[in-house]
Length: 397
Image (cartoon, rainbow, N blue to C red; front, side, top):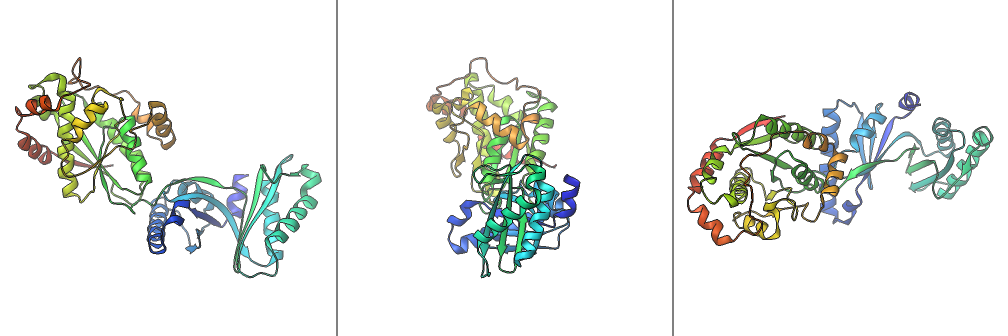
């Protein structure tokens, strides 16, 4: 069946996310331009040949002989709500009926229910109701008895769609749900505190879905962790970058182990908080260097000892110039894991890796700011930040 459809389809209908229509005209045009760029970059990356990408009101129409493959790939592009591989024909009524019946013959199976939907723009000498009535009757007359078909307008097994745009028509029988969101790149970039674990990966993906490119920054705690944690992070980063085709695929690795050695000489129950506060400071410097607008983390309320509401306030105080964004703040673990599985990061994020041995036996869950600041008086924070920035290695995956 799929091989037959590959030879029939010659187009892809690309539907914009509904949110794009809430924007003013000039903003919407900018978003559509960015979306077109992302689509072209994605097709180039996956070596999908096409002859043209045409924009119409609320749609892109892609002309390609690889419509099925292109549809599955474009369903992962942020800013697209759904895609349909289709067949292009003219707006002549007889041509529409002919191509639709041809597609119905391939798409319908014995015992299926079906419905016809028609969207029409332009001045034709027939109505959408004419298409519904005559095409539906033609399918029943041609295949009804042989395939034992029935009409179901509410929940059909097969929906035969007809989109008429002036002198062009596209017919389709499959709607593939896409990722939605906003086109990647319509919002400024963010620095992502990235461990390679389940939470940080999902947090980064969620802001990418809202249009923000993310620069993953991984803090290597060696000798308190081993190489397995770094390898895991790079594998997860590769999956995330596959959602951001056309954007840099670079992971910034900060050597953080020396910082931890100094931190462990202070109040040990605050080790995790002091560690994360240092990460925030380094991330702020990177945000300034890379012209980012903030920092995104995978922190959720109560997920770890350092992520109680009290401790999050202590962490926030370390960031002076850039906001901390926490898209998972109110998520529970099951919700986060569900998204991780759907986007493909969970398999690697949940794989076995060495745990950090610097975690105290009884970390503080209600840190007092004055005690944290007193512990940090023992640290040469500015030197630690400078050394961290100098230690950065950039890995392209």
